[in-house]
Image: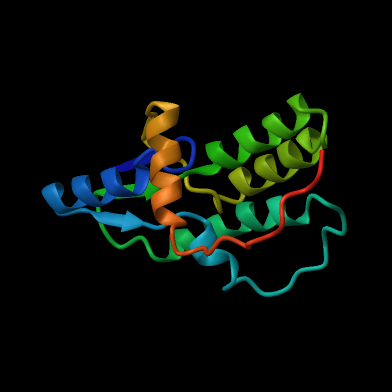
Length: 149
């Protein structure tokens, strides 16, 4: 059984994955970003879409580390799809056609992890913001002089 946890950053996905895996003697599969650097350079996609393409490719690597029956997946292809749609909605980029083309291709090749259960994790914005600030507290302020208005 593969249970995927998706949602915005700093809402507790990784924490829940680890907690449920520990309680159920399951395996956590880290999110895509842990696998991106392991991918060989691939120049088959030469557009701004290439970084999103690498996230889809990372699922094939994540599949290789699955070795149990109870899998707790930290993010799924749904997160990448949501990001593609968000970019479209903000009128920044429209990668929907490319994304759907490769998503269909990888689904047919069975190189995308398809969860049995999907859990969307969320929390209040101020809590996520506080977690972000705690996580980035090691960043020193730049001491930039204030600008004149």
